[in-house]
Length: 467
Image (cartoon, helix red, strand yellow):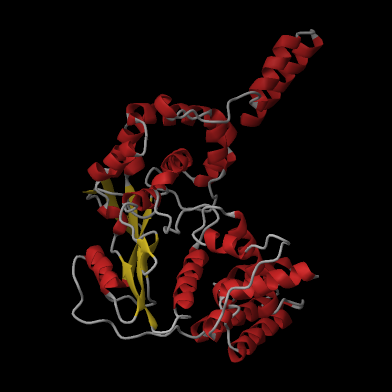
């Protein structure tokens, strides 16, 4: 019917063209193409007003294979019919934002327990996965795009999650860089305390978050909408086709939502600490207090984590060492065996290469930016054997660990140089040369810092520029 409607509208425009009705033809062309529709959303006292163009693009970003939420609306439907649905949903979204109310069905979550182990025996062996409405996720993405630039100046600079062009690799690189540069000094030690909050997103108190949103300059209607979004969220459990009829209302935002992680980072942004001897860095709700201790004076470090958790541990945890790549190697070995079984069933060509890139290569090269420069020769040979094994299964040559590591290190260094908001931007600026595009090599006394990311990336950068 949609196809027939489009053909009918096209024939109508052709008839107007034959009748020399240029005004009608041009109006029809503008209606189809969305010509001269405003693509920027007004901010300030006018609040958030979504356009049809924005809603259409947001609907097309839905992933077609995602499971439907409690409303039963498929993401494939929203993606395929975005052109036809953007008008009505744009009106619905704007009405929700204007009234400061979120429909109850859009706030409802379906909790599906997913086993963590092959044979779960207790409740802790299940991971709760929350399914929410795809329409709600679409609206959340639009609100997030509007909210992010408004509150950017209030965010913690050492919060590495949900920031443009910044990820978990950057958090690990920053932690290792600050630790290893401090250990270059005599009489220095480093202590790190890791924290992981349980059900962190559900701990958001709407009243406190509302005060922070008002302080950041977010308009009243959007603040009211966010507070309603966080309160009275019904949940029910689905187990093997059975749905509980009991709704549990909670405050906060469960996992499975788009806006909740960013709201949590804003909620915890005012708890920050960054001095030359101690800093608190975060990745969403995962936090680490890093103490750069000189001559055994760890008072600032202990004071920081005591403020974070409200108590002082009776004794310091034992020293830990970074683990080897053995678990990573075992997982990649198992994935290579799966590739061999696929080939025995006749799977080959692009499909087999897709499996390798998404499953095997993602396991072999996970976090390679952080460990590629400091890997031991023994571990490198072990990983290269896995790559050669995968290459024989695929029947085509594959890049070695060194080639992949160097390429990704250079890409990460280029990203750091272009990102002015990155915490390591000042360090890289100080290494810049005023005479050429080369970077000054950091002063390295000990081998462990010389083999870390930044000195190794600078060496590769200078070598390429010399060529």
